[in-house]
Length: 395
Image: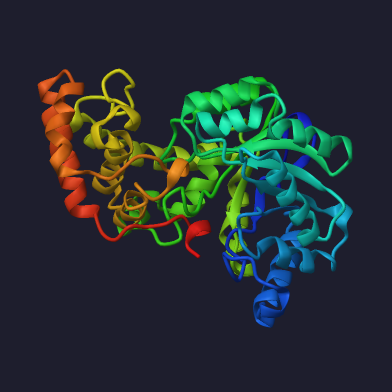
C-alpha cells in the first residue's frame, strides 16, 4: 500500500480507503437479530482483507442504514488503535438532533471515539448556515472534540464551488470529502484551495460517481486500454499529490483487487496515463468543438436556481457530453433521472419541454439558445426513464 499525509491531521493515510456504503445489509436501521449471518461474515472478511492490504482507513455514515452497526460488530475482532475510523452525520437545524445521531453512531460502532468526523453534506447555503453559524453544528462538534469523542473534523460535499470554497475558507475544517475524477474536474479550484490550507482531500466514490466504472461502455474500455477504465481513473486521481485517498465502496473482498493492482504503476503514473488522457481528451474535444461554448460558463449558462422550472442545464449538457463522447448511457441515465429527486445532493430538475421557450429570455444568444434547446430535447428523449433515488433514500 502507498500512503500520503492527510493534510494538517498528519495521519498517514492509505491512498485507498475502505468505504462502508455498499456492504450494509439494509439502508434502513434494523436490529442485529435481523442481519443475515452470511452478510455479517462477509463484512468481517472485507475488513480483514482491507487491513491485510494496508488499507486501515474505514469510513461509514449514520445515513448508511445498518453499515455502522454491522461494522461495529466486525471491528471488535481487530485492534482499534490500528484503524483510522470515520463516520459522517448530516447537518440539521436542530443541534440536539445531530448530537443524538452522533451518540447513536458511537453506540453502533462500539467505540469510544472516531478519528474522523464529517459533517455530511454541506451542499447549499442552508446546510452551510446550519453548520457554521454561532451555536450551530460546528459548535457542538467542538464540544465532542474537547470530550475526546472525535479527533479531527471535516465535511463532505456535493455542492457547487462557491459553497465548497466558502466552507474551506472558513478555516474550521481539517479535511474535505468531495468529487473529482476524469469525467468531472470542475472541483479542481476548491481542491487547490483546500491544499493551501493544508487540508486532507478525500475523493468520494471514484468507481460509481466517477462513471459506473465497474460496468463501463465498450467505447470507454477501448479508449482506456491497456488499463481498465477503473484502473485509469484511480491513477488519474492519484496523479495529483493534492489528493490523498480514494474511497472504494466495497461489497466483497475481491472488490479491492483491481484497485490494489494499479499500484504497480504508482511510480510512473504520469507516463502510464498520458496517452490515455490524450485519447479521452480528443473524444471530449470533438463534442466540445461541436458545441462551440463552455457549458460551465456562469455568465452564459444560468444555474438551475435561475432557470424556469429549475432545469439543471449545466449538468444535463455535461451528461450529454459523456453519452456522446464515451457512450456512457447507463451512467448518464442514472444521474439524469436523479434530477428532481436528489435534493441538495443533486439539485435541479430534468427537462420540461414546455419550459424551453421561456429559457430564451435568460440566454441572450440565439445560436446558444438553439443549441441548448436541441441538446436538452435530445437528452430528455434518450435518458429519461423512471425517476431514481439516492441509495441512502431508496428504503
